[in-house]
Length: 157
Image 1 (cartoon, rainbow, N blue to C red):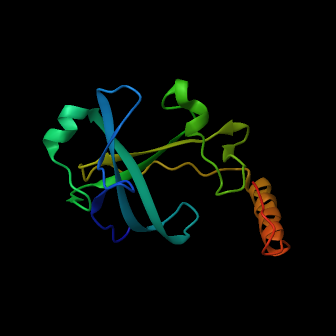
Image 2 (cartoon, rainbow, N blue to C red):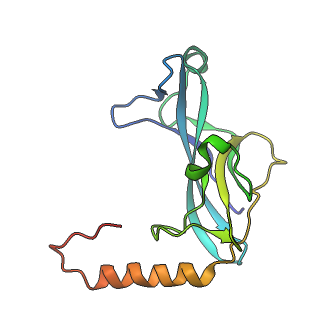
C-alpha cells in the first residue's frame, strides 16, 4: 500500500451513520478509505475500499460516530481459498469487476472480505487468480457490448 488516507465514516442518503440489521439489537456503520496501491501484478491503481463495523446498536451509539469522521487505522483486504463464513460463502466470492466471472485458482474460488484494523502490523492477504484468459474474454465481451449499444438501449449484465 502507498499513501493511504484516513478511514472515513460514511452516512446513508438520509444522513444516518448507524444502520440497523435484521436483528433490531445489532447494527453497523460503513467506512471508506481511498488508497493508491500496487497489486500482485505490479499494477498501480487508485482504490476505494469500504468495510462495515458491526456491534450492538447501543454500543455503536456510545461510540458517537459522526458522518465524515476520520478514524485512525485502515481497511484491510483478506483473500482465502476457504470461505470466511461458510453460511455466506457465495457472497464472499471475489468477482472480476462487472464481468460475472469469479476469480479462481485452478477450480477453487477466491473468497474476499474487508475489515477495519487499527494495527500497523496487519497487511493485505491477496491471492493471484489463475483464470486470466476467462476474465479477459469476459472483459472483451462487456467492452464490445458497451461499444455496440445505442445510447437508447439498455444493457443488463
